[in-house]
Image (tube, rainbow, N blue to C red; front, top):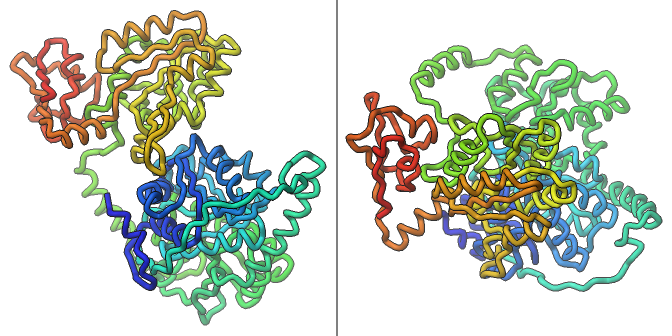
Length: 625
């Protein structure tokens, strides 16, 4: 892990190579921010992680909130007391927070408040690739889009200024390529966090009963008119390059980088209008740009958000102009990430320019090389306790049971050979969809959820199961951390984002508090005991909870190494018949085939002993050292 204290250097004009998320963290440190809240989610995780690492030294408050709507509400409380606050989340987190954000747009804020929403084109670590620019349109909130780490830092600072000028929260929309790109960032001065404010009672502005809400809707619309003026004069909305022909490009965010590279690749001499504020759009600036060109090409990732609005502007100001992008004929894809190649191909098709590279030849050469490489699908780590949990769940439930699952490492249980996972929608959905499945099929139903997800969104569904007497079993795969996004803490760990410990929130006590009568804890590596507990749970007349508890193997191995405890890999003995049950049942990456025989990769094996437990011939010896 990099030394994040580099973010604390008070060295104005110093250029530092930072990740986009780290650049946003630096922008926070230069903006007098007193509070940072987050629920971890890729590609936004490193924003909160960076601040958490240095919060005590920086002197600001940081927390890993239970979920995204809580994170927004906590920050909104501070911002309405005049304290600058920022909340970071991945794109689907904004769905969770939307209920608060839609009304917070009416209420507004006193201290600057920035909401970072990190979109994930190509679904690298997400269940969808929604375009969150539409949330800016829906909520009537300003939206800024950086295209590189330097802009990410600068726009973070500007977003706070705009927020306070308008009295509105501001969205900072990033994408994976901005969040996870490293680039040079020029430092400004560190600012002392403002930690304390004052609540000024303004019920008509802040208490959204219908009579007040109607008035504040009008107020919000007036603020957005002022936001249009800011957009028109913003240094983030600029002509990035002046061309000499009649073709113009309009782009924003990471797509702008592709547009610049692609136009150079095909030698297209076009003017480029770069939009850094994508809501509200600078209508006058766009109208003038349209008037100067015969043809305009809109290059953007995911949805035609800009294109549709630009066409509406053109109808009033430049009705005869050609506008190309994703609507009518789809020159650029509406799915996945863009690339220089994808943009160059679209530009060439629109303009008649020739591509200088033979991409088909490149594809053929790549396919020949890739054909000889082994596939590398995502997989649970060697020694992961979830593998043991899934083995028990499938053994007890069999092929007849329903297995709704949830968001986390354990979503990989749906892949072969474990094959445990029938429906996955969103955080916390497993326990609720389980109830519908059970009533529709009358089959045994085991809902699978992780420990962090349990606190994030599963509790309301569990209460619903108790209230409606649903005969379902909730299997909580508790590896004592938020593993998938980088081992962040959650209420069950007791560790706080700002450092130090507080009271741990017990999953078993919460479950009993929700009204569940049968709540048990099982060590997933103790297969017989775990199976017995799960069988008993399935026999209960109402809802039941089984907590499969064992630490994430990465944390466990790290701790063993810290203590100097040797890890002795498992060994295949002469009793092995090469039945390959271990491989077929578990799919552990430490179990491999060498010359047609099962062997153990000593560099991966952590001696969890699961393979030894399932071997029908007792042919595997394991010692933890």
